[in-house]
Amino acid sequence: MDKATLRRAARPKVFVASRDDHNAGVLSGEWIDAAQDDLDVELAIALILALAKTNDEAEDWVILDYDGFGQYRVKRDEWIEDVSAVARGIVEYGEAYAAWVNECDPEYVNDHAGFLASYAGAWPGLAEFAAQEWAECGYPSLSYEDIGGASEHIRVDYESFGKALLSEGHIEIAYHDHGVWVFRTHR
Image 1 (cartoon, rainbow, N blue to C red):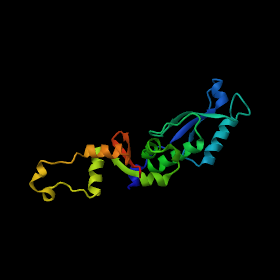
Image 2: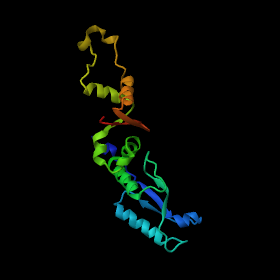
Image 3: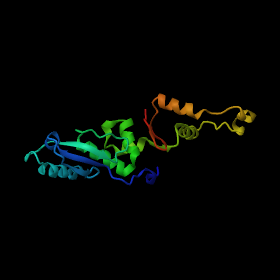
Image 4: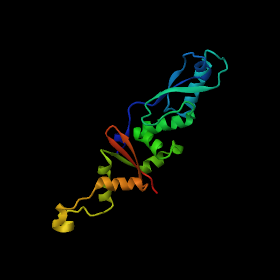
């Protein structure tokens, strides 16, 4: 797999504020680089809480906004360790990682090995992936040599083959601006 095609330039970030300030209608908080180590993110949140305007002993925080997470939807009260794990995955592997967490199994936000094992690439469409899969499985190409003169009358419906792979649970897909990301489910 060509990691260069997966990488993403922007680093995911979250806007975190003291829950007390937010509930009191006080605009406060800071953008935090979410792809840092968990401890660094927690220290940044502790600083935000220390600077809270409505409560000198603020302990609760809330994520009010986020950017750079692709298809992953950060929840207001999500565990910061999970947010940070997804952010690090996006920095390492690109937005396909965020789509994989959404489509395949959100419980494995920090499973980089699982992502690498299941990621089958970015494709213009499902039919293009299915054509490659057909060839890799060793099925006949239905060329003239394979079936004689009938090849002009027979064709493989790669779109239907791809849909069959999807409906039978062999793959998951996530759409993006230029096509689909395909993930093998290893079932």
